[in-house]
Length: 148
Image (cartoon, rainbow, N blue to C red; front, top):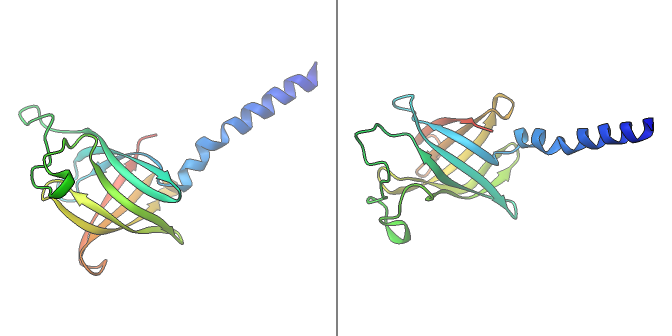
């Protein structure tokens, strides 16, 4: 009877491993913290397919007197007038050593698409996200907080 109990305990321990593996990857749900105000603006779900990361807005944090279902009126092309919730704002990011780069990030407030870099911090609890034009030193950074 004891071998069955040990097998069950070992199986339970190994089934929990994928939850710990997430801390080494940006895949998951993140709270976007505005670098200017320090307030939460949105929750973004980052997913991975074939080694490429994508991030979509899942939830917005807006004052009650503002539109709760805004559209990306400043966006151009296929994203023009799409609802912000569900909008893909991170595209094409790939692992590059300890960082993630080679992709873009969309700022729905101004509709502009920037080159982007991301790096996990604080043991995977935070994500440093940088959007820039040309060189990384010419841009803005935000720190996002893991929600899962």
